[in-house]
Length: 357
Image (cartoon, rainbow, N blue to C red; front, side, top):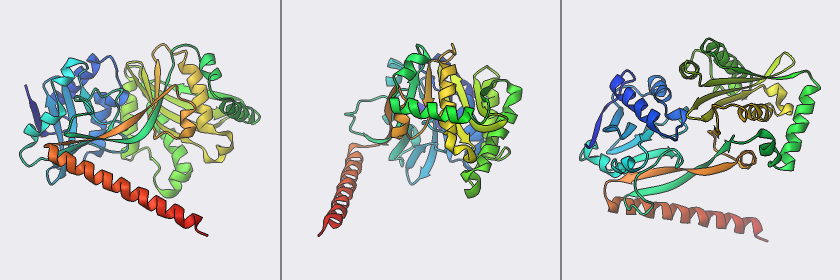
């Protein structure tokens, strides 16, 4: 069986039920690759018309594609999707659905398709790095924390500087009142949890620049739908950090297959001196090490050095450009080499100017 490609609708039960069956069969799962999550993203953020397409290779592979125009296709990409909406069977089955064979279903005019935010841990992408029709580009680093073992051992292995900084923030917070970490898990609590999270965003810099989530806008509706769907099966966590009666931080999380993902974080700007987001992370991790349903935490972020000190592992997310023919891939590689060379030359020129007498 080969690939089939057809316009995608959020109410396409055949596609989404097949997607979820494949997700359930995998030993390595990611909450953002569950059908409830991807489907909600399509429903709330999918472009109008027939741009989005469902690509399927039997029961071995599912992809949400976006027609970018002029023979170009990409994976569907919106801010809430931190990982490419590409679901592949593990092991030999993945090799039976090579991404380079998708062109036959995309039509004779298709010459390239791009996969954004490919995570090697969750995407068993067919083909080797030597595949001449696939161009790989490293985009950014992401981090995770394995919660097997005990929290004391994990925390003791962090740097002295980090431990001291969090201890200081905790003492400062405790001087203002009792520090309490709340965790909402019930379906009925999710609407209020998302609304509370939104109020924190609106109160800060995101509210000032107009980018804050609101309870009833597309983002607020998306996160409420996702949190309620996951909560219905006991796989949602809405963490809230209070100092006295004041809420200073919130984190929305989902779980599947032992993996918890931190989808969205907000904190009270007025409490910035308490490092509220990091303090919440610390207290949350202490709980998660004792949670039998979680053995891995994914921080879906573009990690900086301050994130790496929390991690037990990190990896690079990729952008894959799949070309119909090798000469096209060669042209793309040459273009990238020239861009890198020009950037290096500009950097050298800037350095020479700075050091000029």
